[in-house]
Image 1 (cartoon, rainbow, N blue to C red):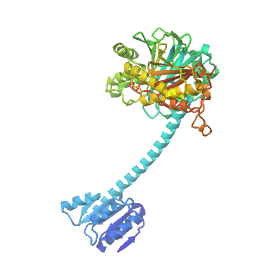
Image 2 (cartoon, one colour):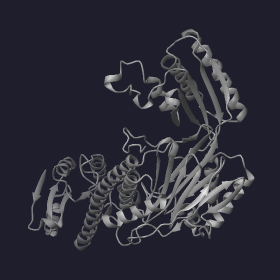
Image 3 (cartoon, rainbow, N blue to C red):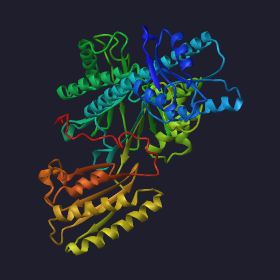
Image 4 (cartoon, helix red, strand yellow):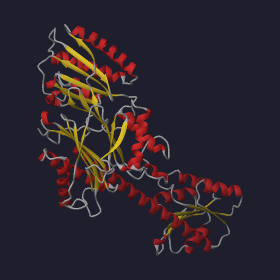
Length: 576
């Protein structure tokens, strides 16, 4: 049987009283006169009322006919809609085993009969407060989770926008027929997305070709850092387009004035930067640092800071005030030179456990010791060993950014590429292509084994096969007697060139085979596959020379320009 008494003040909570003695339920109903009360005199009715009315608390007798209190409690705890309702047992049983069983079934309290009604009311008040606090905490957690999800959406969207403005930099930029600029960029924010960001553009006609590289560090680490990063590089890209002949100092002044005038930066917002501009023909490097750590020049086994104490090129950070003047420095480079750019988050890593940040001089000496000990390191290996060496000062090898600042490092090398192994093939028909590719692969694998390099064999086979077939079909037009030359070398990456003797083509016009209109066409598939497999893909000689680079798997993958998305479309037109 069951009954219900609704009292004047339901704000005190809804209580379900379960006891087979009607007098007990009636007395307790009157005592709890500030609550809404439901009563049940058997277990089944209690479960039905609990499922229907969802009380805030249940007072439950143990000894009842048909279904005892333990069974009722276990049943309620098995039902999703009632499992969180707190249960207080009221019983004459005082055996410790009985008490233990009560708590084991899910009760929050146990009161032995006879009891004082004032005690019951205080216990109810306490557990109702606890339940309300839990509910409040649950609601706050749900709200926090919702906020975090929205924040993640904002951060992810901002990160995608930043990568659209500044897509993944290439691994290689050809400077001259025998020289390439190798680029390895790595950045690890302290949160989902930080305030470190970098820009890379190659501009100008062939006789005046220059590559611009900028590493910036926004103040702060919140979402607005990413938004300021987007604003900064939108302006920077626009200035490069509008004023391609301006040097780093002039472009910095225009960028600073534009950002201050736009009002995107608050009074205490600023950013530091190191901006480089490399002339491909003269190998003259013009640079500025703006409140940023100097960069490292590695030449002939020696490491030094640039700019030095007496050199030009050091300036205040951006957005300190309008009308800032920026002076640039100049540095002639030579083949084999290496440059390391970094943000102060790297040298501050030792402070995460209460240590002291490295000075720029100490960091330079640390890299110098690495270079002296292992002079043959590739740029990716050097970056990995450098980050590990700083992290080891108060921990172990670097695995993730566990500091309160963003960590960014970019390694550059003017990598000679004039010494290459070469093979020449003159296929007579389609049947000679597969044996030629197998011969080529066996030579390359022997070469890589001698170099101690680890290249994914599947990627190598597919890339070589697709490149060779592409040269035979589209370059040579399947005409017997046309020469296909293949050259390869091991530098920071394993690179090979496939050179055909055909009429050439515009690489920008390669059809995307995934597009609906192109799915039945027989061209574009090979290039599409190679582009998916390679770490870098580029052309020379009006499309007659295809250059494919594959990252050495033995090199640590601490890199942003492997894996960062390439844009679907070019946002910035090439300035010529």
